Picture 1 (cartoon, rainbow, N blue to C red):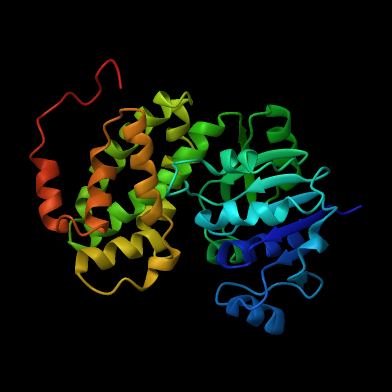
Picture 2: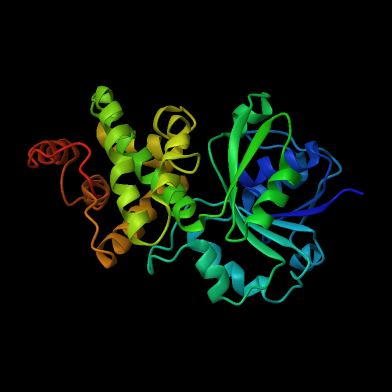
Length: 326
């Protein structure tokens, strides 16, 4: 009997989850609030600029239709998740695996999304995150990838990875929810940094960025009580190709627009903008030095021109590459 899968948020990533859930044989329902233009078009045409969904996928603006699902996948923007939790408290999630597929941290509090779920009183069967590299455009073209399910309960991670595994996506699992969640969110900030380098015609510095950025993210994860090794896995470093180099990466495109001094039309879709502020809240709280993330935030906030910021990073004191401590 097919699993009943709900997808909350049917934009670029959400529409992929509709498509993928149907591809692996689940009975899929997609939800968005009334009046969202992209969702109206999806209901009318069964397609968007990324893919076409099968006719048997149900699309609704009635959240009650999600109640009783076996699996609820959430793909709304990270900064809107807390308000969605208020609505989710009104439906029965007791038999549902709640899977958060956003890569962000709450801007005003520095809270991780799983923390928000718990603070808001959601009580699903299990709570996990789904992160890792991939773009809908590549998946629908049958380009395979590896991704990650992380939960504090390893048995849940193993079970959900098994349910979602296919010839298109090979899943790994983790019980390091802190490392995977922070790493996945911070990856978008590094994507903006990569785009800035592209915009400045400094793309050759991306190798150095890839070497140094995980160091500072790993320091933060360790200070928060997570496993720093997760930063070098699929949640962060493993997602660099899709974020630092891909033409589909909204965060890279946003950074590139900054570097070139052109318009920033992709601001709405660049999760790393708010995440840069959120990560620095955590860095200050845990007293962790994060020069790359701090520089990206300053550039986004127009506190310093991008080219000057790169110069200041280079003017920092020399240091050992791999000291015996973070």
